[in-house]
Image (cartoon, rainbow, N blue to C red; front, side):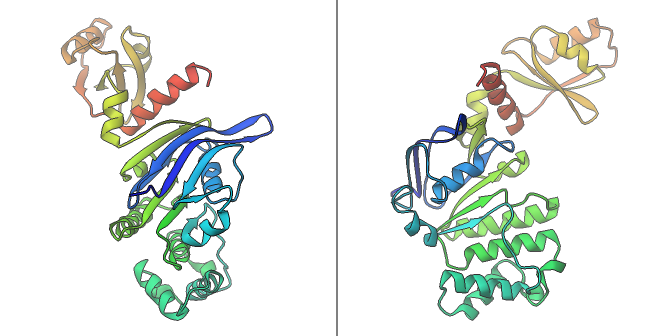
Length: 306
C-alpha cells in the first residue's frame, strides 16, 4: 500500500532562517500521526508545504501519491485541513457555515451532507445557533465538520485543540478516533504532551528538525536508558547538584529525577539523600513519560547548538 504522505529531506528557508530542516517521514493510510513540538518548531510550515500552500526550498514530498510541487491543485480537494484559526462566520449559524463550505467544495446533495456531518460531530441541537455565540469547544467541532464535508481520505489538523478546555479536547479526540476507525488518515500537530500520547506514532520537532518519529513505547525504549524516580522530602537544588543525576524537576509536591544508567537503586538514592541531611525522604520508581523523551531529545539538540 502506498503511503498517504511521503516526505524526504523536505526543507523550507525564509532568507537565512531555516524553518524546516531536511525532514523525512512517511504516514501510512489509516494512521493517526502526531507532530509534537513547541510553537515555532516548524510544524505549521511542514503542513503548509504538504498542502502546496508553500513551495519547499529543497526536498521531495508526495501527498496521496501527488507531488506537492507540481500537483498542489489536485491535492487540496482530496484532503481536509483544519488550521489553528479556521475561518468561521460568526454572524451565520452552524448549519449556514457548513452549507457555505459545502458550496465551496462543490459537494453534491449539500443539505444531506451538512446534516450527516452535524450528526457526526454532535452539533445537531446547535445547528441553528449563531457561531459567534458558541463556546470554543463547539466552534472547534464545527471547524472539524467543515473540513470533513467533502469526505477527504486524509485530514491535516494544525493545533486543533488550542484554547479549549480538557473535556472538549477529550471529546474532540473521540471524534478523531472515529474517523480513523472509518479509514481516514489523520496528521495532527500539537504542543500538548498528553494529547500527543493519543497518536499511534509521534514525530518530535525542535528548531525545524524532526528529532525522532515512532510509537510512544518505542521512543521511550530507544531514548530513555536511565532510571526515573519520584522523590519526596528532598530539595530540588540538592538533587540537581548530586553526581549521577541527569535531570531533576519539580513534579506536584515532590521531585522527578532522571539518573544515569546504573547510578542508583532506590535504596542507594535514598541513602545518598539521607547523607545530605534529609531524614524523611521517600524514593520510588516512576514510569517514563513522553515529556522525558522530549526533554532528552531537545536537550541533546540544544546542547549540540542545533
